[in-house]
Image (cartoon, rainbow, N blue to C red; front, side, top):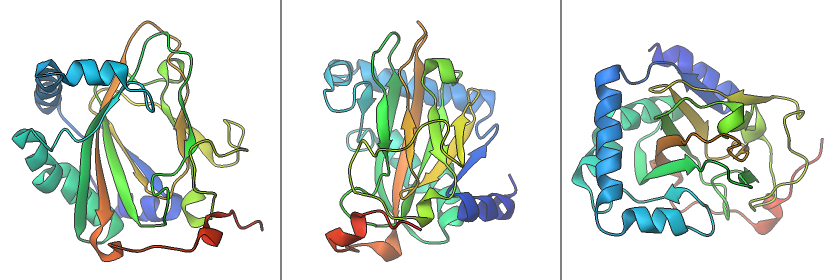
Length: 220
């Protein structure tokens, strides 16, 4: 990885794709730890019954030392720290799956809902990730605008200027700013679209808040 080149792209677009972030051995290790986590306790049951974000299980790091260390000191942390040019305040490691045959995806939003705190998410594909099975969509440059603070922002679809589908192979990674608009459509296939994400706030933005007026998109 040329981190300086990736940083320039991330700063410009608010998102970047990193091919072959994990090699085959590292990918198998992440997959194995993820499946082992889901099998413990009621994790798989909670994942299946999630009402707000179906197919999502956050805070893997809270009760799993392996995920906690990876979140705090692993390659995801090192890469994100370089891209945002800041120390990190680690937030959560999470498992995502666009479920086969689902009827809804996740509506357009940015991650810093409720405030404008700066940070970034790095997520790694465990499966082939395509339009058909609910890949992410990013809007390049949207991190420089102001939007209403909610899930379900109107006026965003695949025809929106700067939008692209984040199609990944297993082991590829994508990174987006906490201020970048993104969404995923339903999985229209019978195959899972699994991924693991690592979410960080920039340490220097800790406690940063803005007036609600700042949540309204500035029209130019």
